Length: 337
Image (cartoon, rainbow, N blue to C red; front, side):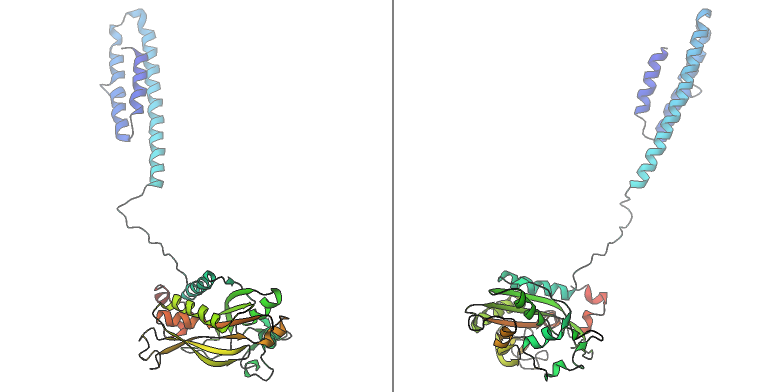
């Protein structure tokens, strides 16, 4: 047998080996009791005496080389098996479920409301939650004797001169009109604070969205058109809307806005108190005194403002009967959205 040819054959056989069992078959083929090396050793007596020594050395070198090749191949198979063990995916095993979070219902409804007004040309702004007494009350034409300015109706901050936690998002009106001049249209979402006793419909912290549009020739009919578009986008095209005269210090005239009950369609049910209507927000034309406080000419410019409670809109839209559910972090409730 040609030992050089056998070496090439061994390498070719080892390249095809992909498992310990296949490697053992090749080892037996060459190193077994009846293998190739045994045949080579057995053929030595038939070789001329002067050639036996050289042939024997070649056989021993071939045998040593085989042991080295088999050891390397065995180590290679072990490394490959370990690597496959790290990356193997057993499709027979159950997967590990990943819990995917969702937006909080208040975040969801806030984004939806802001999106509706953005499509009508309103920009979205923010205001600080710690406000000055001027921005929260005086600049909005709320007089000193107004009940909302009493300590039991507002969170005043101790050791901070005339600072408080804003009781509504309306102070953003003052800030925006001081920083920008008309025309402007903006909505301001955010948290507000009032020392109310917590129950099914009240919380000491809740969310509002303020809206403001100021420009030349802005009329009450513009306010009605904007709010009707908003109401139908949120509650559906089938709802009806009405305005009821009301009083707010920072708007004149002022109006509460109702929509037909989304549960009974205006026929009367327990949700709407048998009235067929649901209150959703307050609104009105910006009071001239507010324009005066922010140095805007009320003879040249007019505008409207509105404000709504996000929790109330969410409760009506999703049929929720207790405001406390929004803040209890009960996953059984939150997973529904």
